Length: 120
Image (cartoon, rainbow, N blue to C red; front, top):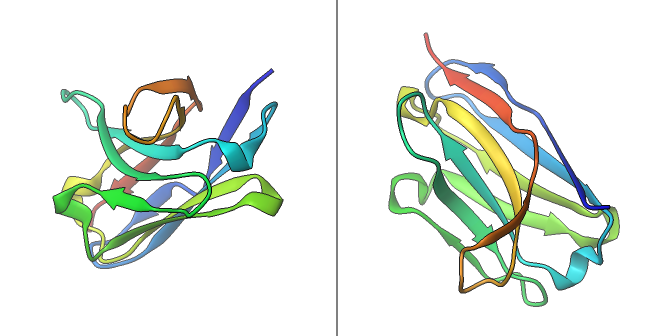
């Protein structure tokens, strides 16, 4: 049974940092591309960052490049999203998702989400 459990969300002021973690279980983590999505109020869910299995190739949307970093620790079955220089427009529920494959951007499983609020 696949489980993805996010943690690390909360309230941050503009310019501050947060690190999200997603603990995975129920599948062979190192073989699966992983991703972070987010959904802001009234908006569609969007892919923020993804990381491949194997080489750990990454891709991030333009609005977070230079501020966010996605990484993974295969030994700990965990994927991270380091978020620096946070902006109010980063406010959203952030979801961890396993991908069917790195290039399809099609999620196969979702976490329950963690709220990130950026406000002064």
